[in-house]
Length: 286
Ligand code: GUN
Image (cartoon, rainbow, N blue to C red):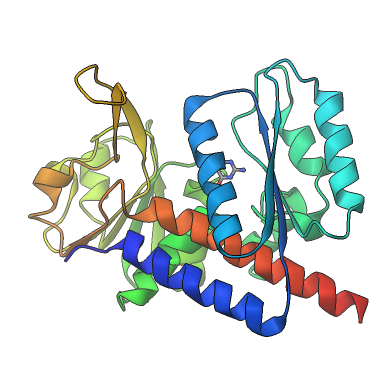
């Protein structure tokens, strides 16, 4: 079975749009992009576009690669004070001269639409999160939509990033899966992955997870969206996941394609989080 994240994301966007209209709320999302990393440029345009489609006050602020950390912090301080902004997202990675932790720390936790601030990350770990990180939330929505049972199941997450690996492991644990976080230093990674009833690949290595990593009948979630240079393609590159879809498709009972799986869900969940933060901000004011 193909887990169609693209179609599910379209459904989710419709629901979010309808809910915002019903509640008479105009969620405000500001995305900050520093520099011109090609992947980030494209993600930020998509975020801007989807926000506009849903009727949000969504905008992207683009800063040059040479912007200083102080300039970024100043902008965040202004956005923190602006009541029309409910969600602030600083696109990662940042240029090397800017301290990512300091930037994330500067975002008002009540506007931290990514759930990256240590306060929110801590709440997530303790099980009382306000919002959930967008990609992990998208993964969980896909599993829920397709009624994939998690309770007591073996879940293996490959990748330990703060953006995906760690938080998706926490969410799976909250849903009573038995969770292993594996990574590049894991001894006999294929064998560890073969124990998984649910395998989440979030490594950032094109097509790394082959059939030898997958147990028969496992559910495979491919979080990777890798750009591979290929001069023969119209854009000079193509996108592919961390999972070798062609070979794994036959072994897995269910699998997300990439592109067209988790990626579109991430953006839909960003909008869902923005709406939630806008609602919370309104409740606090009345
Ligand atoms: N870079 C890659 N994924 C993400 C994300 O979910 N949020 C932010 N802020 N940056 C990212």
